[in-house]
Length: 284
Image 1 (cartoon, helix red, strand yellow):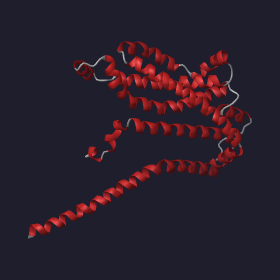
Image 2 (tube, rainbow, N blue to C red; image 1 turned 120 degrees about the horizontal axis):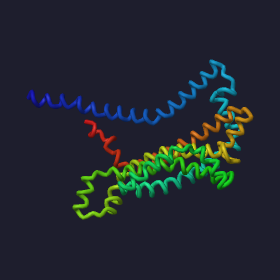
Image 3 (spheres, rainbow, N blue to C red; image 1 turned 60 degrees about the horizontal axis):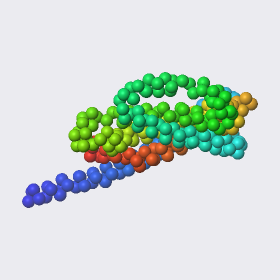
Image 4 (tube, one colour; image 1 turned 120 degrees about the vertical axis):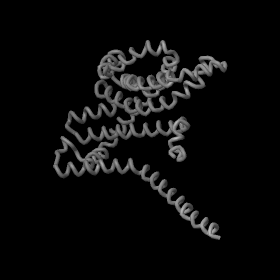
């Protein structure tokens, strides 16, 4: 009788511990969702408080409330110029995806080509893109085309390198086994190399989309009559510093939006690569 009565008592704490663990996980997930918003609002609050306490002039460091007021006051030109910047960035980024993916597969498929072209790619990427913009203006004139090409040039390299690295780093032992089973080099690239490079590819997209905006802004500040970069140059020439910060904030918002889209697609396409990180059993 002593054994039968001891069993229900020992099972009760275990049964009650399960809901507590589930509740802990739920609260942690909720905290992870709201944490980015808390950080953003916290930074804006510290910024606002610092400007108010130290009484910084607006032409040096405007408060967030002043910047938001400028965004509303100049909302029509900001939206118009932001649409132009988003257009040139998305077009240049899209071209970089196509060429970076194709070129990365071609370079990563051969160690000879990989070792031969890598120094050239490093040297090309080391060239400041702002120095290329005047050449693009000579070739294509002032306007949209130089901004698209600059966004392409600055976002092309991360995509190419990550895709090529993902394909080139397929284990030699795995290649030997697949060849022994009758797989050709093309089969290895298509069925193993490309899927293997997908996590690298999507990781590069999240980097490339942010620098693509940098490329568009650079071109718009140097040789354009429209865009956020052009708007910021005009505002700075008139010492409208809140409008300059408003342009920076709008650019950041567009970059975050594109990052969220890339992150969403990455989770849909490469969830298998990170599935074990969310598996509770993998941590025990």
